Length: 335
Ligand SMILES: Cc1cc2nc3c(=O)[nH]c(=O)nc-3n(C[C@H](O)[C@H](O)[C@H](O)COP(=O)(O)O)c2cc1C
Image 1: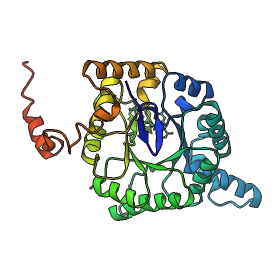
Image 2 (image 1 turned 90 degrees about the horizontal axis):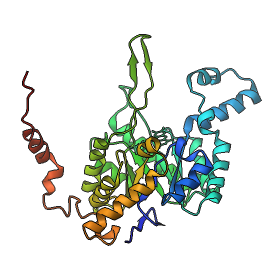
Image 3 (image 1 turned 60 degrees about the horizontal axis):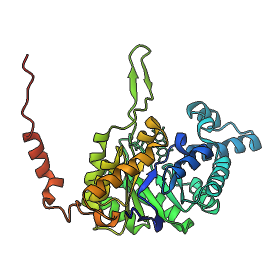
Image 4 (image 1 turned 135 degrees about the horizontal axis):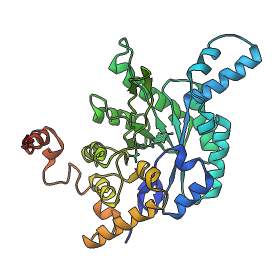
């Protein structure tokens, strides 16, 4: 059975790729274990813009003893280094990860503003990254920022990184654009090679006892895969961009669905955090089993077969599906 696939110009032995997250890739033994369990590539956890700019501000502070915003910045920004390493250690870790495994290693840069931090894309390339994933996590909470400005910012950061590095770039997108297709086209024109769908926004919770807003990370549920599945189905075959699905891929069947709607790779995080590294091998077995039962010899045979372009009911991915779905529910509790 041929599970090979191509993503960002990289020849991968299968479509199963652990997604960016420090608990998965901060430890080299775990990275090796992921490779042994069948990981086709590794996406490193992110290096955050704030880590880079804080480190620079810290240096500046000690060099000049000026009082500008450094003090404010350190009290506000959580100490990520304990969790995530500082910028220099990150690059060292990336280089060690490359040495530790034979599979491709993708660096991850996470930020939002235009600025010197994007230079770290070059450092990642020099440290041996086979590709870069850019995650632009931005909440446009300022009423004076227009949607055009938000979108232009995404493109400018991408263009900035594109002109600095030669390796392929994937954009980890959020699903909340008015026209995701248009954004995808613009990203392709700005030099992206792939899209990672989707960035999962973590919603803060309210602590009613202490009247505080508190961060709270919930791992994904399988249902959440439906959103990236829909969008991969719509985009497949219409752009020159590779597609990765992240969010809600928890078993062999959801990975197969991802390929059928047109993903080149499926990324996994929550399921591995819940069940451990070995789960990756089980998921590969589940995929093989399903393919054997349904007489598919290769990932290529499946890829895009249920995309909007190829499936028997293209309208199922659009508004018609919404009307059909609400009609399909006709229950009410008998109390
Ligand atoms: C603990 C944790 C850490 C994460 N760290 C990152 C990160 O550093 N960069 C990033 O782009 N995504 C990060 N993510 C998001 C994952 O890469 C992934 O996109 C998301 O969890 C959805 O996939 P899943 O449903 O398989 O969990 C993190 C997720 C978790 C749960």
